[in-house]
Length: 508
Image (cartoon, rainbow, N blue to C red; front, side, top):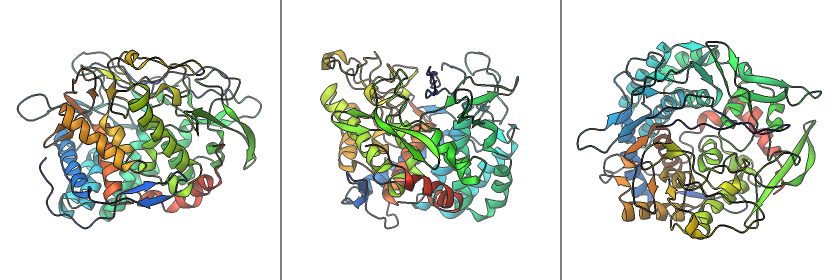
């Protein structure tokens, strides 16, 4: 599997995005469960409203099987591996490697399983303690965790399993954000673990990744987070995470909430690239003063809708963060509105533009093998960003769309539909049912496989911890809203992050 890698954007103030990591090759019906609230959606004005909950038993069944895949990924040490292969007749085959993101996914999935009654409290606490004990043992630098470990013994990977390719030790800001997210959720769910987790988090100072804003030279001093550092040389990545509507904003929120980053960091992130920068679409908008910062409040227009683009146009960039931070609730007419429109753009690309008959595009396993970033090119900033098909058919703003026949080998990723549940629940469930009915994308016992080539019918043999972790969190939010959000509604999130989102005024 090739680990997703984002390329750097050029230009003054550009939204440079890169993981800077190594490229590597590589259901039974649910029993009775506690009563759960209705699935919720968001209206076009961003406000939440209830949706009929007849599908709750189905969602619980999907969650139960998804959590079984997380259990299958988890080693005796307590760390969720990067992936499992479910193609064989026996037990799934685990990968050797794990990352901070994978470990975080395992933590919040276990809390969700406990909260939904899939496992009992004693089992939840025991599994959380085992994982926290393993995390305490892992080698760290500057209070943060390296990007790749052996999930079976906790050692730092120096060679990629199966290929022997060298792996440089790297501290990723975005991957550490997801582990810290999982640790905060575990601490909220298990009081006995709070002192130990507090000691771990006390050393994680987000200012390590931060380059302060320099008004005299905003290119080298952008007020943004570095992608990371290689610890063998203490060399930083050559880019910062500049785009706002991407998953690295979770690190930004965490740092603002704990006080290690200034609040104005939020306003130095880009809604679009600046008008003078090359990007997917020439942005419209205006400069506004926000808390003393001159902010380019730009937007794109896609299919008649004003939208804040992500970097590549994928679902997880925009919609993984609000699984935890209640952006649509705190910012209904900005974040809530753009999330709603983002989902609509994904749906219409799959059903109307490419005419796949299915939708939902996000980085995932290529069904035939390997890894690729999938998305809707037009709603990402990057020129020729993430295409919805393995053959990479791109669109160009102002130029007629390619015919649907040009979108060969389209790949739909089930986790993208789960991320859409709060915004288009009926359509998301229908899309997932169709992927199961038409392609056998659902594995009875372990949940949805990672991806489907909707032209050939080829389904991925693998499941990724990241994608299963997003599915587990999305299902938890749909079945029991707020279950995983408690740590992100209190403390610094309430006092420092919420006021920023309340002030947000996208030009949409």
